[in-house]
Image 1 (cartoon, rainbow, N blue to C red):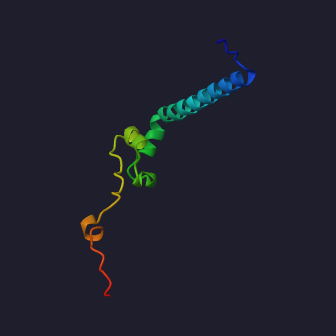
Image 2: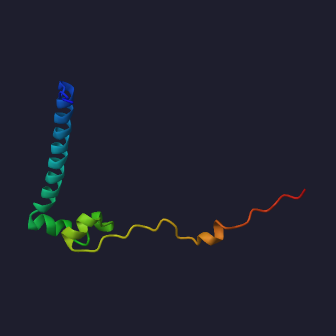
Length: 92
């Protein structure tokens, strides 16, 4: 069986590859911008009195050498107190 490559298939492949390259470039630019901070910018950003550092994400943690803010736990109550309660039966 000899299958011909159609024009629409070629266009789909080119579009998919173009999108992949664009996404890779965007990610590269985002990473490189963070790496290009001057020493003065880094000092200002990583200052403990900077209000932006009330919550520290992983990138800021790596940049400033400070621990990331832990995310809040999803459930702080004891599930056995609320989930496993028997449902009262109605009186007949």
